[in-house]
Image (cartoon, rainbow, N blue to C red; front, top):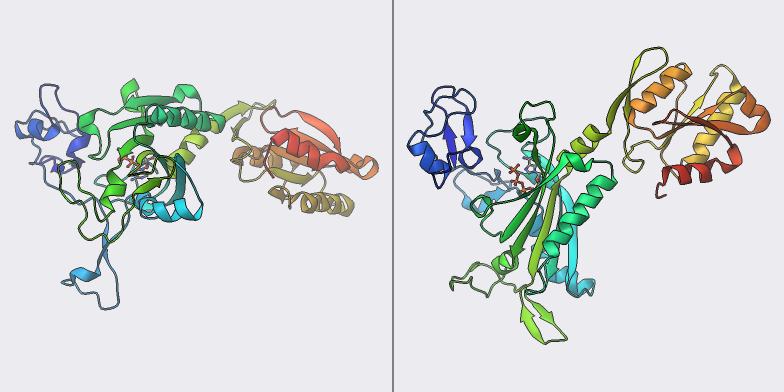
Length: 389
Ligand code: ATP
């Protein structure tokens, strides 16, 4: 439901507005002018109206405005493709419960208030996992996934202090959800109140058997209503050991790629002052997230032997890890550039290298330097970065 402020003309999703506790819903509070516009403070909000959050389009060469057959909707989540293919994947891959199917891809939503950097855009990237379990064996599974995702996010550099879990209240949950835990990230540390600093990073929902049933031809919901009269398929699962047929429950971790990347960037961002008193930016990205793993830099770009050796080293590293060569500045500037884009290691080739076949490896985070023989460089870097090659 959507409401507009008559005063400042800002549009809001009614379910996102905070309302006094004595009301059951934001809509009820709006009706008695009990909610102030978050933008201008006016209490004159319009009666909430339904808003289509799916993006509608028309497909086909003959598409005209009246032809309902040409009407199409862009997916608002990646999940449904997984549900429709559930049996196909289970049978082709010979899986037994419990198992999961993961997918990453674009999703589209007709957001009422897009904005806030990349936090709310109409086109975004999702990574979703549908984890299928036998009903009755779902106890505790959601909490396990919450822990795994916390480990995953902190393992790639997010500070646990910047992550918060929120048990979503029933009235806030999607209609299919039995339980949802949202993971919030402190995207706005500069905001004055603690409450305003957080925004959702991902959610983990217990979707019960709602989706598989909804896509199937036979079953009715708990009240006996046929969910999908158009379906020609049945997505129930046959459990061989017990000879039972049933619709598995689903635990779904659903994460936004854009929001996750922003969070990783924010946690990685640090500043440091060098010995000349200049402020430097260092992006302390986890090596696996760093787009470039190593930069090979010649100390003197006018010395052909040094340039040739540096370029050879870069070429030799390239099949194993993303390496770049750069000679477009003095060494201080080259280091600073790599620090800023998060390159975990720099390799410098100098005059000495021509004699001793060794190079200097410089660490992004400590700025410490170490001399390493060229013959051992690849192994040294693999160990140092812990990068899966
Ligand atoms: P919100 O309450 O912020 O609108 P949601 O609860 O509707 O989010 P989900 O349906 O749970 O979001 O989607 C899973 C994840 O996809 C979210 O946690 C978020 O990271 C991401 N996401 C959802 N909508 C957007 C959007 N418009 N732009 C960018 N990322 C989004």
